[in-house]
Amino acid sequence: MPSEETEVVVVGAGQAGVAMSEHLGAHGIPHVVLERHRIAERWRSERWDSLVANGPAWHDRFPGLEFQDVHPDAFASKEQVADYFVAYAEKIGAPVRCGVEVNSVRRHEGRPGFRVETSEGSIDTRFVVAATGPFQRPVIPPVVPDGAVPVQIHSSQYRNPRQLPAGAVVVVGAGSSGVQIADELRRSGRRVFLSVGPHDRPPRQYRGRDFCWWLGVLGLWDLDTPPQGAAHVTIAVSGARGGHTVDFRALAADGIELVGMTAAYEDGVLTFAPDLAENIALGDEKYLDLLRAADAYVERNGLDLPEEPEAHVLGADPACVTEPRLELGLAEAGVTSIVWATGFAADYGWLDVDAFDANGRPDQRRGVSAESGVYFLGLPWLSRRGSSFIWGAWHDAKYIADHITTQRGYLAYGADEN
Image (cartoon, rainbow, N blue to C red):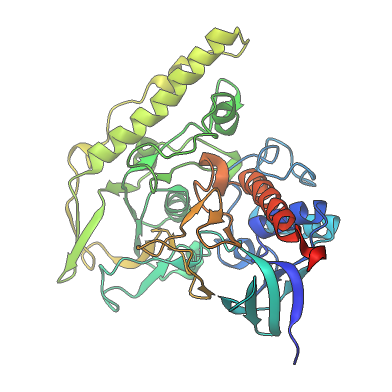
């Protein structure tokens, strides 16, 4: 069967793939977007039931379309986010093919471009954009052996408290996912232990403005390099229940027992690092740093925004922080489930090209890889701090589309003379 041909193959139809299609279409570049499931599938089927976007609807969207039936300052549900991308793809006429698995991408020998092998045949293309994003393979650290507790699941498998057997739950990871899942489990009546590692803890709102607004006017979304040691630090922020600042002291007051980073397991006992107070303190300092920067911005620009001195008052550390638990006998505590909110790893096994560094990570700058003709999109810190947000992927896609357009111009030069 002869191979199909197109100029660009985009792999993945989440926020990155849909954004890429818009910009390629604007340049008149022939392309297809291949998606093994449905558009924005991970929002629909790989997140818990009550998940909402972490940014308000006025901010977490593409420029060309507002959310329908969502107040600009509200937080869209996961289904509303998925529906948004479906509507956007329809609006721009994105050539998305759902249910198509990409099995391999290999460079042609002796001529430009790549052969893309899919579940529905092969495609020859000049450019490939890997828009599969960072949430490809759930990571569960090999700490607790199978069978030590009745249920161990990754946060991507968690749906709601009814899914878990009766009993206490350990939630490992205190980024947005871990905090929201722990809070939901506690509100359902469970005993909950939350393992807290290093994190960034911005205010949800301050002086009448969402933290997304503050990061924008302070230029912090545009940071192009993570602060030292912060490349993989999780962010503890929540849009749940209308949006609120994550406060670990409040979580403790509500009955969640905070513990340090999960360290090891032996003979039914889970042990934790003695780093809880330090992790809380570092998160507090990042929180206060943003408040101070916001105050300075208000004063410097003469803005009429209400003062909020109480936001600077943190209160005393709870007993679980000042006298942290370092060991937990799982059976004794009635623990029947562990939810690992420990992030994801990339999986580019299908991309058989020289576009990775010695550690297997994409070797790229602003999405332009070391392998000519291959691009990456949707990754954290791809070009800036905001790259992993919906709007950030849209801007990164524009840069890549411009780069492809320039490369097409070079490749076309002199073609009529041959």
